[in-house]
Length: 527
Image 1 (cartoon, rainbow, N blue to C red):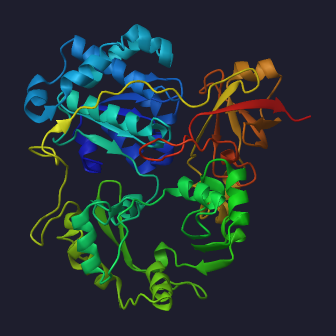
Image 2: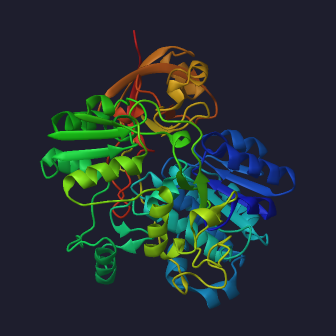
Image 3: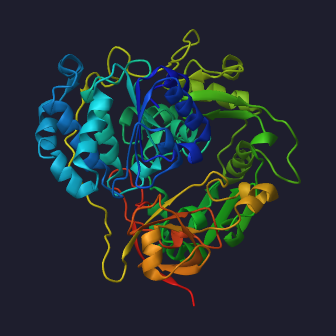
């Protein structure tokens, strides 16, 4: 997030797109609802009529995968009606004219054809976002999990810069992270193309820096592979072993039948986790890890806040903290590690990671610190790009609408979306081990429009078979008018009816994120 959670209360207009905020991020969802109660405007754009639309000033249901067209349409109106921030654009950005030339083509009439959103609503959205002093954008995986995911995010950044809503309090571009330490994992090197602190692997200076820091003679200068790319490489035989930590690809990855075959055939599979997940059941070696309450350390949350994790109870059996497991393996494989505590590890993080340079366990305290925190006297950064952008000038990117890989046809006549529900968490590794939670929502379902249900002779709780070009599953029907005709929705948490058996592994060409949100499927009643 460019800005902080507390700043939500100071914004004039909040624009949510591709985020079922009250179910997937309920704490931030409650903050947004409070801001609306206190007078903030709310715009919601989502293919489903999600819960937070109940308090929205404007709520629209765009066709799945049509976000770029919708945002370009808003920018078209803003420029046409001269609602853009000319001074901000002139002084703090570049390449505005190139972007303007593209969005000129996205008239409200054209955007209505692409998105299904009424052209008058598009005009209203643009005015409500651009006519206030402070506007903020919140998005999640409904924006990123597309072949156009990178372009979607660039479109959002264009919209924020167009109206001068970056680099000020209660504005910004705010992605909501899907798990508690996704931000921290990315910050500290959990991506295949960067060292800790987003220092590029291909940069010769960074390569030399980390060789010296880690006392090694060689580090690769080539970018590594992302999750789906690793599965594909394993299928081809160029990867013969996988070490999976705290991840359950048998539920979370697209095209589950393909993932299962690869994991069954791979020469050596290690899984490190707190429970015996669907993926761990396939492993040659399972390493029992301590959960969050059984170890010390830190997490970095969605607003870049580094927070302490304090051990509350002892880990059961032979379970150990992740860093201790990694250290033991490293020592056995010939690279000596001799860390004695998480505090020691954090000192190294501070030394090699400029954005964490001023952070240590003592300074984190009870409230945490937000990076960038550049030295021991730096109080941290509440919001990014104050005064100027990190790169100097903000760069506009001309982005055109990119349609999803799959569309409906005679055989696959529905578009399936996937997502989360309030009562389960991600692949269910923790929540489905809680009887109270799992008993409340113990099974998957498929949400469908009442008119589609009538046409197919279906009623609530009927069993149906859903099939895509990659596989098929069975689940029960939940009839709900919040879903549009020709579209269905499934939560992906359940191994009994795994939605990701059906989803598409086609990747965004830059971020390499799979298109999990748009899948062409067929649906029929189980006799």
